[in-house]
Figure 1 (cartoon, rainbow, N blue to C red):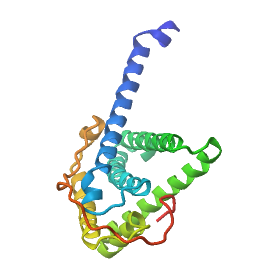
Figure 2 (figure 1 turned 180 degrees about the horizontal axis):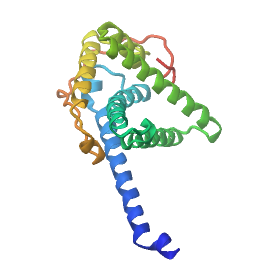
Figure 3 (figure 1 turned 135 degrees about the vertical axis):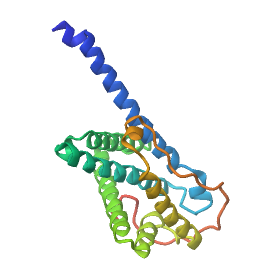
Figure 4 (figure 1 turned 45 degrees about the vertical axis):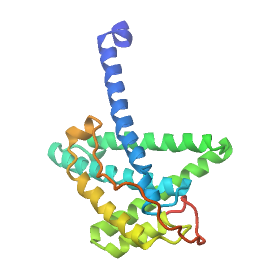
Length: 219
């Protein structure tokens, strides 16, 4: 009993949990860091607002989950396990859960009350799946117009997208996907993720405002 609670096996499990947590935090931390790159906002005109930052978080997280999904399917085919029981599936779920906890914390720090936090989180989660579905559909079909429409609808929903910025952002999505296809399980399982670099930031012309919903609205 004491060995189970405090002995070598328990310490090993604690080390495993600590290592797993470090991997999740490393992957998600890089997603957040890349979503905050100044060039996205200053060069390409992504609105530097809570909505705009949410959309950049979703975009970078989407590429990570897309790659983990491919690795999950490969592992399931190789081992005969259900996809949900694969290591890649477990890592994907752990990163997703960590992202939701981070969004929850950010909302609370922004002053959202306990009474409203549940409904706000449901809307953000629904918005995430809506955006991911839009990007997946456009990329699977090789439909560049649909991809730009999805980016315009989501990222620039409250302003008119700068044409050069929208085109650059669409090209960046392709660069993200291409980079993600080089990420191995060994890399990701050790918390290593390499996104493509962006150009140095330069201020764009100010976009015109337009009426639209919020970041919580699904694509």
